[in-house]
Amino acid sequence: DSGVTQTPKHLITATGQRVTLRCSPRSGDLSVYWYQQSLDQGLQFLIQYYNGEERAKGNILERFSAQQFPDLHSELNLSSLELGDSALYFCASRRGLAGGPDEQFFGPGTRLTVL
Amino acid sequence: LAKTTQPISMDSYEGQEVNITCSHNNIATNDYITWYQQFPSQGPRFIIQGYKTKVTNEVASLFIPADRKSSTLSLPRVSLSDTAVYYCLVGGGTSNQAGTALIFGKGTTLSVSS
Image (cartoon, rainbow over all chains, first blue to last red; front, side, top):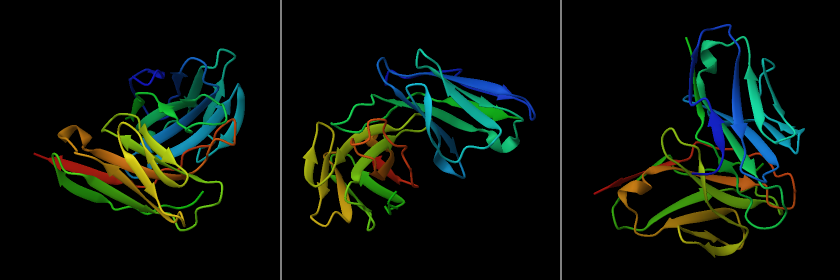
């Protein structure tokens, strides 16, 4: 158990719909990252938040957005869903301190299926 | 971030030592080398990280030559439960307090048989 929690575990929805994925980082971790893993693209970085502010963006579509709340949990919003958005979505967290191994802790993921 | 090249797959038997080599010719001076392990339908798990020479923990060893253009993850006496995908990543490091995103390649699928 990494200490990172994600809900829901599974999500099945239809094209055109909107969903929200939730992530609670490890206690005390300031950085939250979202990754998407699909069969054809592998693991891809989407977006990073640090202490409530957006820090870095990766291959995140304009239909996707995220935020990190004052209690440090994060939500990833996916809208106008397409079949190709079906994937595993992972959240990871990191302490945010300099020094020591730069380790990210991954949650169990949310499996999104778009029909 | 530096691009990495590692074998697509490797096969081994229980009890053997497995060495997975990763090439990263364009590694930058402040880049670290990190390895993650991923089981099917689970999130990646940090294995080990190093900057130069050799790093060892309770799970694995990481060998980094002086030129740092490659690295080798060594798993001693593998078991069936070590069957997973292993990713070599270069970049990041702890100088950035906020941390940096991980850029994953294809990884190496290790299959351990009895």
